[in-house]
Image (cartoon, rainbow, N blue to C red; front, side, top):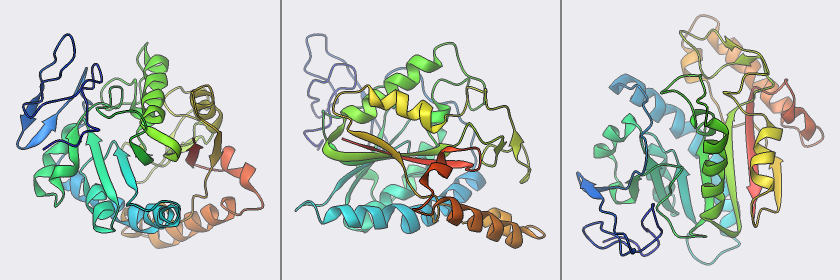
Amino acid sequence: MLAPWIVCPACGSALDASLRCSGPTPHQFAWDDGIPDLVVGARFEDSGSDCRDSVEEEMDDFTIRSYLLPRLAARQHDIDRPLRVLSLGCGVGWDVDLINDAGFDGVGVDCGSRVRAWRTRKHRDKLLQASGLHLPFADGTFDVVFSGCVLAHVGVVGDSCEVTPTYRADRERFCAEAARVTRTGGQLILSGPNRWCPADLFHRQRGYRPRLHLPSEPFLASFDDIRRLFVRLPGVRSVSTLPVTGYWRFNGLRQRPFGSLLAALLNCHFRVISLPAWPFLRRTLLNPWLIVRISK
């Protein structure tokens, strides 16, 4: 049975059990192995494998337990029901299991190839196939929206670093949808590589050699890029950076020669730029990984 706040992503009308909407021009969607397929428009053409899915699950496990769950617990004191949390671009869906097991009401959406991993998820009933450009939720549904390394892949050619002619409009719509489904008093947390940092540690071609790029490259976003996308939206009160420490553990790097030393140096660097006294450092080229909080 669908929750009442799950609606037609095309027109916002109610959906019946067969995933047919009640709008004046009804849209018909389908169930895919017990999971609603509510994708409108193109799907994300990402490449994947069981090995890659396993690596993503391991990374998500650390990030969610170390970074997201403590922040959700801190916000839970402000509300007398379990926080409703959206993982926007949940990939293999491991984060949704962790969020629900921690006592929150977690929901995940994705429209890429990683949804094949959902068959093993404990909370499959909390997963939906949907596009971030057309979210199947009523306005103000979620207390927190979390989106890890997704914005940079909106408006790109497949799973590449090449943007499409419509990438600006696509990113504007993605951000508008994320803000729309966040309630007043809620917040969004977006993360991704920083455009100003010339070393992209997170989209490597092979091994752990950084992908070098010019700051003028449109693929990645800076803090100012993200602020401009959100500040104009109705109900948005503030846009700020969050500390970076605790987000990454660099598990793969630790398995390489001298990798543990390099991982320790990177984490030390992240702790420095996360110090409360120097929040401006997170917006500069010294910070390879942006985490941005948008408050409504």
